Image (cartoon, rainbow over all chains, first blue to last red; front, side, top):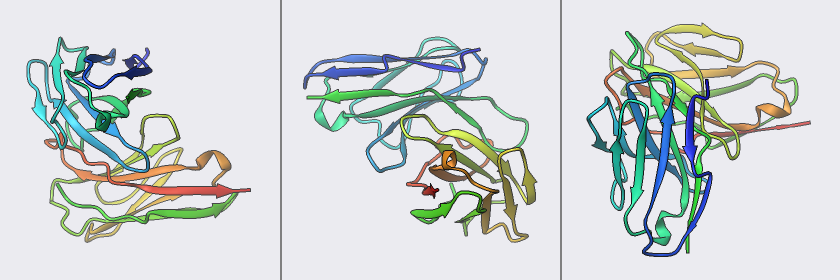
Length: 115
Length: 110
């Protein structure tokens, strides 16, 4: 049981290049999320997918696209990378609890540098 | 989503109890309070969640007063390995846009 797996762990891009961050979870969770974390700051939500077949914008969606490929996989794409997108990206998933609030399980992160 | 306020940083020594208070004055009736811990170069990890009164697990305790406008995460007898950033979140089952603020950086010294 690996939890949430992100690939790649590290990536260096040149401005204008494109790339896709992959995320997969093996916990049969319904919901998945992409966050970014900049130095000294908290996590900011980019996009989320409440359930398979749906995606919605978070706090900072500009410059990104997502695909919920199936229940397990949720990818984040940068079509034309910019230096401002240099960050650590975290994928997370959660199960719809009967009560309480969503509890997120995070991946280890993907460190992206855009030159 | 209810806005939360927590201290930016706290220092402690090994063996002491650390209490981090989070303010959430506009918490809604269906909201729960959830705390996460994040070590450097890792994703946040769920610690504890509660609705009212006191919740305890093997890692921490969460105290929530009757008015629920604040909550306190208590870490008993901390060690160097408890040095991390701690985040307080408030929301209910329908909240997917969960916001992680800057959190509280707890530094434990020998």
